[in-house]
Length: 188
Image (cartoon, rainbow, N blue to C red; front, side, top):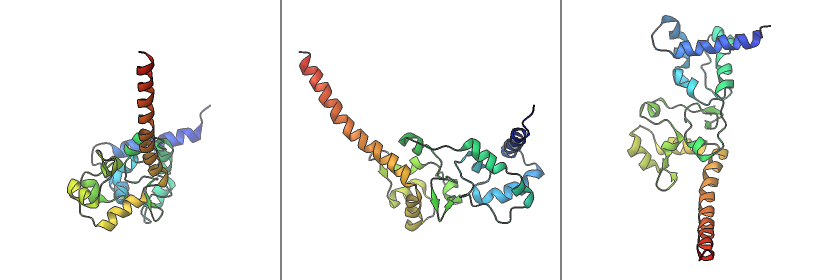
């Protein structure tokens, strides 16, 4: 027996694959136009939540009735649990980075090469870049309020993951040193 709900979802999800494929077929112009405010087809590689996605209010009924975006969200949803997971996530259209209950997409930042949360960290000091460091690194037009607004928009859960692993590293290393020293002196 065919599960028609599952079959329907599969068809709609395959539509996403066709939309994201190479080529400028005429049928793509309308959906791409309405998705341009949320990064176009990049949105399908983001960890979005539909309730935070800032879709155009002018989106035609046809596309609202095809719940492609919600079906794709079900497949693509990820809840990072480690620092490495958090840092590897895209900033754009991310359900864990919201401003005024909407996910974030800054077109000029995206085109300037800024994509992942790890781009905001100073790798040596394991801290967020200052505004000046960020400006020098990416050369995107923004002001200090926009930059710090983005930092503030990062979920407290993600910030907790970043801090806990930093603290865990500083706590574990001295313990390892004590155990190593103890093993060295007891084996003599």
